[in-house]
Length: 338
Image (tube, rainbow, N blue to C red; front, side, top):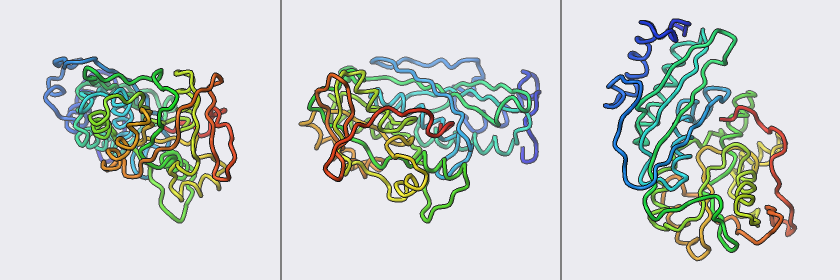
């Protein structure tokens, strides 16, 4: 494992593949369902509506400040399930690995161990999976696909078409950390202050939020395309507009400086540990207090409001007293960000 590499026999279905699965995946992901060694996982269905989400992870580089592709693949899928308001936590994960011939087994174990630790910390086990190997030059080290399943309790209805004029817009912390961490790592950029990815599983924060304010209208993690793209998507879904307050949007000063240097707008930079919340205005302060009491929401803020707008524009009240339109992301700001 320390000096070996992935070869085509690891995907052949024979002894080498069985040994890889047993010595690496089962050893790190170990749980009762996975240990049954079936081609599927059978589990009981909880009350409420079931939720399922799938994510493909092709991030480059595989290891970056604050996380790696393994932890990210767990966090990203847990968050997608949690944004439905999934009760206390999402339930189970599956994982599919596409490995390139020649990829170091030591790096693969590092990724799997990180992924297993993220799943253990979140309390959401990986209960089934698959491994495939492609020829050298036909992949890029490792790609991971994760699928998550969870349940939403009765009475919770969170959807992108439920935003209403007058609703408040909240976010649980600073934006752009993940994208800038990836950019700095990929391009070997050095800043005076270390910038780390905000990759994190948000389901416990969501559980606290839904318990306090069950009538939350919308939750979404602003990953690719950042906060701006997420709000434009919501505006289109709900046929409303948005008015943001620039001074209210939290941005890490180091991230802001890096974006100025790189010619990026933090509003469009990806996040992996942030959520956008839309709720009735009269519940916003209560919800803000709940969010700030959670470790992943200490820097939460109310950043704007939903407004009537037939055009569905997202507007920004600037710190200079002016106003500008915050449009959709045009083109690809930073590829392979997750």
